[in-house]
Length: 176
Image (tube, rainbow, N blue to C red; front, side, top):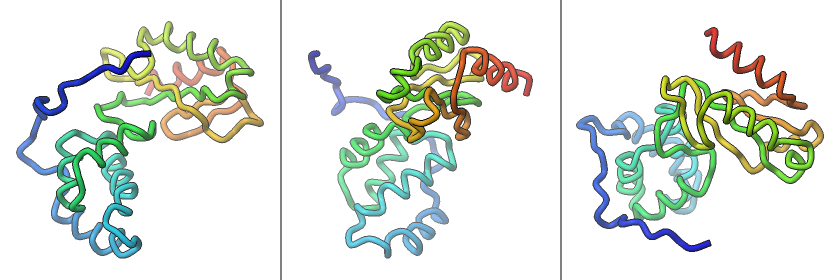
């Protein structure tokens, strides 16, 4: 597999007038997170989790604001956010379906479930339906090998999944 080179130095970052990290958030981080770590870099993960929780995703502008606040390189923030599958760099759908693709789930048929959801929703992995109702993800491990295959749907784990079970979940979510 070849590396794909991206023109990151010349990429234009979409900006909004309102900052993603408010003064209230920064005060909270300074009081709660920063004192827990030997360096400010140590507070990056909990701050990323907080931003993700508040907004549902972490924008490029938010990453720059986190880097400035922590006094670290923007590249360090971007590397962290893009490394962990739990963080999203674009808005997600109202409902997020994340199918586990660990070796155990693979052995127990995760691919059939993933393919079924892809076809049912008409999206590829890491895409959102046109109506914004569903985002489909594939995650490395949900830590539930004894109940494989499993998926995380809106932060609720579903175990021993079947195609019929996934259809019920999607149907229930569609009615909301």
